[in-house]
Length: 205
Ligand SMILES: [Zn+2]
Image 1 (cartoon, rainbow, N blue to C red):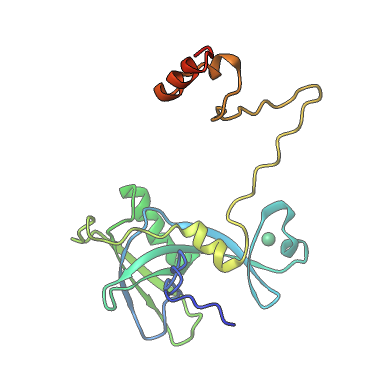
Image 2: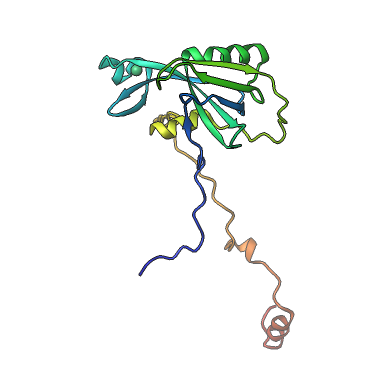
């Protein structure tokens, strides 16, 4: 028997958000929705992009070359859809400079063009202020979390369990007992009818 679920499941956090690069012969014009540029070194290993994890990185130990990329969330002025733009180190220089000067990238216009006809030709970028309304501009994407999702790695290292100290016990507060049984608690007034009946039988009320 199938399990019928008559409403579509809630969309995942990054539903519809794609990672994009500047295309050949297709200059890109977009409004930046995030505050800051996020960058990371990645390796292309086992047929997919893997983040470099620093000193203990297995891909560095295997001498697989790493490359730095910068990431921004942007709103395309053509399609009005938000996506994540990946930039090479060279292309990201203008973005980093703008962020350093202004303190935030949100609302700035980015125009990026790939010079040449190859998919790996260099990209030039310009970043300038725009008249975008920050109140109606979509919220920027949590870039670190988005990247960890597409890289299939946990976003943060979970905190280690606190060590158990010998000789110490944990006290768990218990909820108040809804049916107290102490003699004090049992001294509640009887229903008047019952009190009258007890009197008639010679019982103490
Ligand atoms: Zn590495």
